[in-house]
Image 1 (cartoon, rainbow, N blue to C red):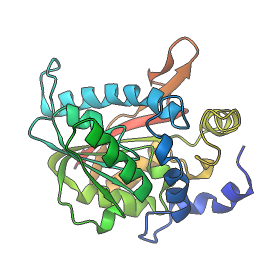
Image 2: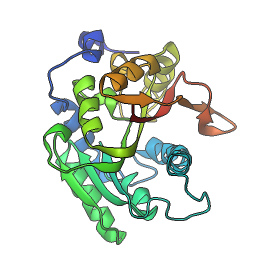
Image 3: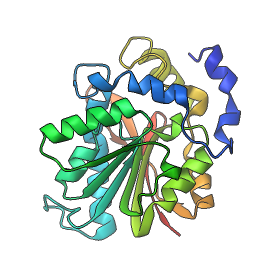
Image 4: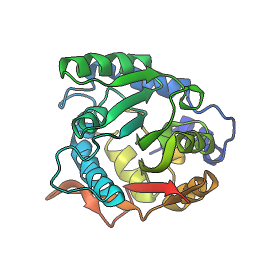
Amino acid sequence: MGDATTDTRSKTSRTETSGQTIRPEEAAHFGQLARDWWDPKGSSAMLHKLNPVRLGFLRKAIDRHWGGDAASRKPLAGKSALDVGCGAGLLCEPLARLGAEVTGVDAAPENIAAAATHAEGSHLDIRYMAGEIGTLDIGQFDLVTAMEVIEHVADKRAFLEALAARLAPGGLMILSTPNRTPASRLLMIGAAEGFGLIPKGTHHWNDFITPEELGELLAEAGLEMGEPTGIAFSPSKGLHLSSDLSLNYLVTARRN
């Protein structure tokens, strides 16, 4: 399960208030995976399996929030979107295809370089930036997403406040993150990392956040969290949306 390093970080990381959100060691870890990010059989293979599930949730949330036509191919036309912790752009590119004017931000410059190269090859106009979200002067956005990111930041409260500051009036925020449960420790770290399904050291169980904790931090940032939806796994369905929150979950958030 968790190693000594993981345990040393301990529960204090969930309430840390340093204001700095980037952990250099986390940025370095994911930066090393940059060249492999778009390979569906590479080190990010699990993200390629997860992405369609997240997009299914995101599309329904977009249609519900803005009352759009579920049959529309570009429900984000005329809207701006910000993906924080964008990696090499696995979510940014679908958002652009849904019609949004997209900005992707990541802590690792290597990821941003890989994202920009792939977007150019896909003929997509996406703005990518490396850095700390709270220090970038990039304005506000109709849609703000941060998928599988909050568990990797140094100061969750400061990170969510920075995300809230980027959310335009009437906008929608969508987050996903692992839950801190015995099941997530067993399967996401013990099994997934142990059997090489995801790179070792990707997750630190003590940094996972429960829906209750996330709801409290979002409320402090002036946002109201929607009902969480789980991401579960079964041999027959693979990864899928579920009422089971024990492994991973997605939430929406709006201004109070």
